[in-house]
Length: 378
Image (cartoon, rainbow, N blue to C red; front, side, top):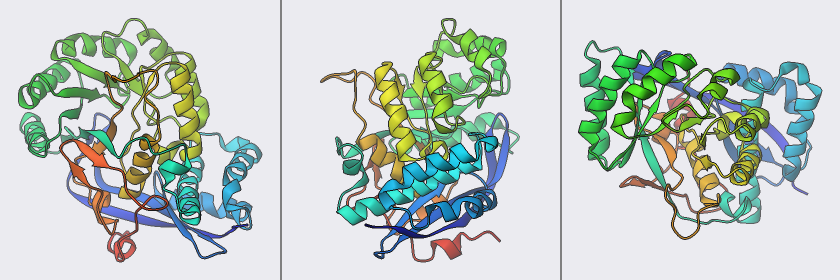
């Protein structure tokens, strides 16, 4: 039996050239925690944990002993026992993100142990390419926000993206101006989604939606704060644009609440934050059962992006049959983020609005030899 003998978490960080971000604020750097898991038969699995690495590492110090000596194939049970025994910690924190990173690393190692890609391991490799949307259109430190938005979108169009996401949420009038500009640049046929990052109350969301609806908005992401359940309920049935959410909802419990209440048309779990493949697969099954849509959030390193690709490759298109009106898309960060490609020995292959699912056992990726030193925090 293959057993876990070591787990470590290493920080990676990249200072951006010009701070950028959302309605809630701008970021001067990007960062994440890389999980490395070692088994007694010499297999190494890698994963990614969302959030500040020092916090994830502190949680790892608390729970590492629970994993050491456990079967590689039983790590889900270990994670569940940790959540049960540390129930006072809650399920919206760095512990859940760490468990997700360990889960991803364990699946990478399991795939290598069995000679299977993770996509095959979790249900079958149904497709080799995944459509993506260019996630950009950020607010920046520049005085001319319209010019900054235009440059970002023009680069995305030149790169072949046919679906886009832009940031809104500072005020409804500006939302309309940004959407009008975006539609002019990307054209009438491209998909346009927007993201308010939960910066509004429900009444402001409705005003924003009514102002931007004429620009053919595919979905409106995180309209209200993650725990504003009343706000989501108020929008249900009143919103003129489909709602998408889930990136800031940890573990299974909040996602089930969204699904059961049909509080969103599109669920956006992040594998590096919600608990990894095991949690995401359950979310995917519940999404299918409630006849909703799935579009994972991904805003970290190439490791998390590869994990999301394998997850999407194994996700059925149910309830669609031969013709899928809206194929599930994956978020593809187009911002200044060297961690997306730089941490990997071979960057993931992007072309014409699609990402190729990595080949080979496990995640099918390897860390660049100098990644952990090149991107080590200063």
